[in-house]
Length: 347
Image (tube, rainbow, N blue to C red; front, top):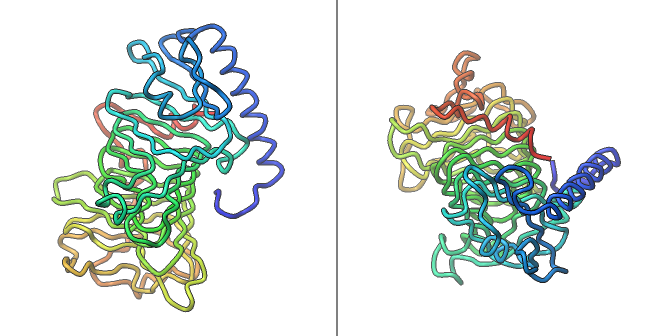
């Protein structure tokens, strides 16, 4: 978990050793050339660099995406991003599938991609994202994605419209609409997501595994937008921890339905005392019921776990019902994508 909590010495040393090995390996690969390991391409991003003649080092992330060599068939582009504040907006296009961002600092706080666009200044919600991901197979490890606009309305840190996307050891920071998890299968593990209102929203098939999800003011964690019962989309939050600022005696909700068939499931997740006992809230233009909206919990715990006080259109699952929402079951598909195994292969 990476919020405002100090990282332990043991964790620091583990990351330090891991990142030192990563930087050394990257240097060896760069010396050997872009195709030293199969069809993969490895490039460095560092504010101290200027783009070199071989396009293997860049001072900006977007410059690397725009000019790095193309991987070979089935290969992956790895961006080894040095510690620093990257004040830029980044677009991972559909023409850059299988891209990996690797922060080479000792923890995610050392590599920060930040911007401050809001709907009021940019002309609409979907012009505000700090990082937009449209390339399938995107992965990120050990860095921070931030929209620093604050409580001024919609302001996205990350927008994801791609399949087989993985975030590990990352921090996603914003206020309203921090993460637009809208399309494809998305896996967020060992990460920290912060916001205030509807700050995880969209219609992806997304799992949040061993994450900390932190709310900064009275609002709603999720606004999932499934539009039909036949869709396999929804959000699963499992083995995670929900935390909250001091809300001055006010409360927050686990979610509200952006669309009629909104689906969000919490499994084995710790809930704080600031959670309203009802758990879930209606959307002003959408009155949910148990026949359409599917809001459910299994084995919630902590001071905010009040299963008997939840709204009547939510569900308390049995162990057998909850099994269908375990990550591997929820992500099951013909391509056998296993994000848990993929995450273990990241540094």
